Length: 551
Image 1 (cartoon, rainbow, N blue to C red):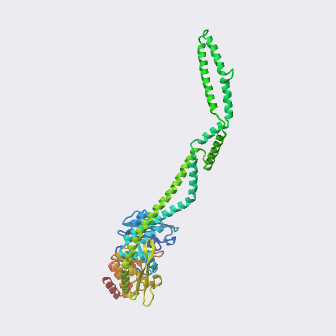
Image 2: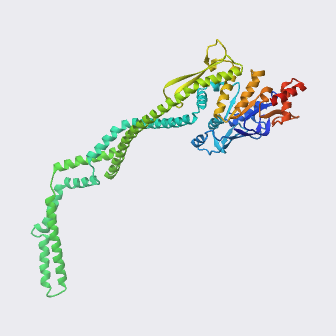
Image 3: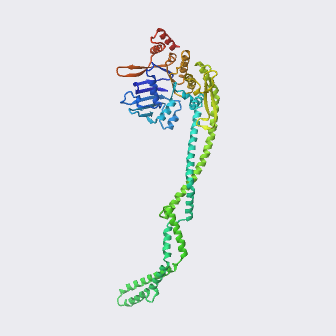
């Protein structure tokens, strides 16, 4: 319920704070005193738009705050889903600066206007002559029946499941879009992967082939040079080995004259052995060098293929080509993973959808079960409100597929007079008749804790006398289950209130200001007596006012 309202610098209000209580309260005041200003200020913290024109003092900002006690109204999931701190008492605040820019807060957390309105719609319903469109809203009609049937928790559970289903369907669409996007690339990636797998590129293969080709393409030159080198070392008459052998013998013959020459003899012998080994190895190397044109052709083709692969994948080494192959494998595997995820999601969606269809069917049956009783009660209340010929019917249509509300759709049909065709509410009756229909419906849902607070703005339009008294009784009875605040001009309704607030204006030479105060018992008698009188308040008016208050 709305427990406190604070208004600063709004139209004719410099600053005021007002406390509200449970039950049925009334607000009265002369025409133009500012009752609509209070509603306008309240509407700002309920998410309505504003501009700088509302500022009384153009040099400072307007601040409006409302305190709401919301225990047992199932609002915790709303706060959790929007990452807001929940408390049984929540504070809504709206600030409008000199430039018309607005800021909104829920429990001191800044929020956008749409979120503030979403929460505001769950806290307060303002009923006025201009709010009949709410009665035509299919969501409101469903909420009424669900409240009356006592299935809000089941509906909430169903909607949670439906939101989950919608989320899974969005995921599936995204995966299918990814599949579609990658479908054209998939064959190409598979082709690339197959090509790389078939190529069987080895690390360092390019360098190895280049070295082999260098050897094979110069085979004749290498073989000829090796042969000539061997001839110099050991093949000719004056070869190196023969000359070294002769030098060794000469030195050995001189050792007897100088022992130090023994060292040189040994060194010559060692070099002779090394060079002889070299000659043998060069001979072996020469024998392994072949002129092989087919081999050259094969290696050249392989090298050209590897060069093309490197260029195709913008790689400079076979190691990079191997890394690219691994990336392509990941993409191909990821595509396969998308297919698997999509398959699992489709099964999960089908299972959840089947479960929700079953739940939606149960909700539909429970709604259908209470509709006749609801129709009868509304018709009975309308009769008390002076529309005895009223006909009120709820048309229930079963949908082909589930929606966020279930598998059925409701439509309220109404006729206020005999012989008049029953129609949808938008075409069925006058504003006064629909206003009484709304009152009848809201008096019933007040027993079901659908909303913490309902505010009626001049619900008395088009009624008087005995009917006004019955309207007041209905509002008072509603106040037993929820907070009801009525702005009224009728004393019969004002007298039914448990608390009575009076809105008035005060003027001086420079300004006009609006104020509100809670009336005492004596002040209530005086105010209701004024409402009963013309210009002069008579003794009989005081007596009648006292009787109304004590009736």
